[in-house]
Length: 121
Image (cartoon, rainbow, N blue to C red; front, side):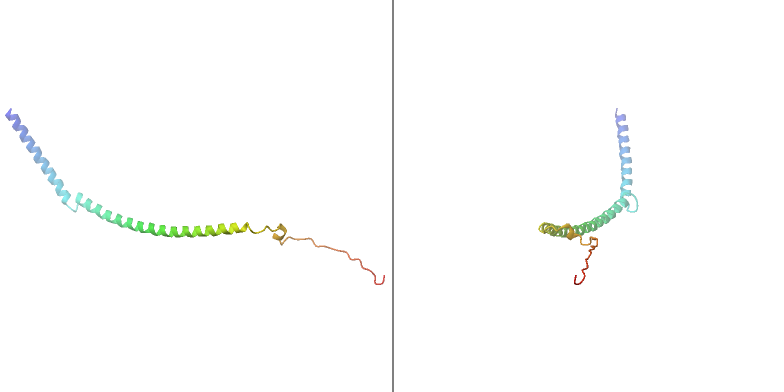
């Protein structure tokens, strides 16, 4: 029985040693900055910095667009109020006859006959 226990103990020690060897190789690859996970982490860090810069520039552009859109909206509201006042004042103007509204209507010439009277008659 002790022989079986010793065999399992040696097998467990060999498995733990192999696991430590594999783990040390992975840690060495992780610490290597030129390849492996270290390179990936450095690349991702650079991409995060670039993304932050692009988000900042997009935020600035959106803020300036928001300001200009707000200004245009307020100007449009002012113009709309003025147009409403103009339309309301048009209701106060009396209606004009249709003939006066169309001055370029063609009229037929009028002919008249004159009766000439003799002098002294």
